[in-house]
Structures are given as structure tokens and as C-alpha cells.
Amino acid sequence: HCYEAVDLDGILTNEFEFPVASFHHAGETYLVPELLKKTWGGTPAIALFASNFPKKREAYRGSEFAPRVLAEHGIDVVMKVSVALSTSSLHSML
Image (cartoon, rainbow, N blue to C red; front, top):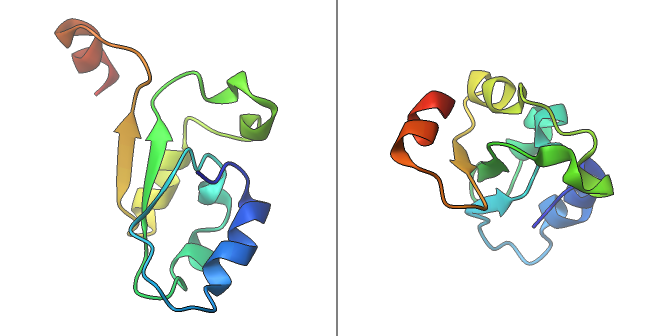
């Protein structure tokens, strides 16, 4: 989990050189896409909540535009939900 952009600084230096496959709950990563691209081992995928992103203080700077910003920078985005959805409500989110 990596809620805030400031959390990435220590992780992405990666002094032990192990690949990072993804960051979950990474609502502020859209603010630093170029930093993500410098991750040792390749750019990680970013897993974001499809809704309810500002429910915690750590997620207040999240944006509904984050997936688009990241995708435009060539970063893989995974959308996730924390509750069960019906098929119809899932289709309305796509």
C-alpha cells in the first residue's frame, strides 16, 4: 500500500534492487508518473479504487482522473472495488 506520493520516495530508491510489480491504494501516483518510470526493474502497475477514494485523510488528493493520467504516461492501471458489485453496476463504471 502506498497512499501518498511522499511515500514513494523511499520505496523507489530501492537500495536492495528488487522489482516492484504494483502499488495498491496508490491514489497520488498520478502526481508523479515520471518518478514511477524510474522504478528499479520496470514501471509498476498501479491499483486504484474505482470509487470512494477520498474516504481517508491519506487519500484526499486522489482523483477520478488518476487512471487516465497514468495510462497516458504508459503506466498500467488496475481498477478495484472494496465491495461486491452487481454486473450492471460494474458495467456502468466501465
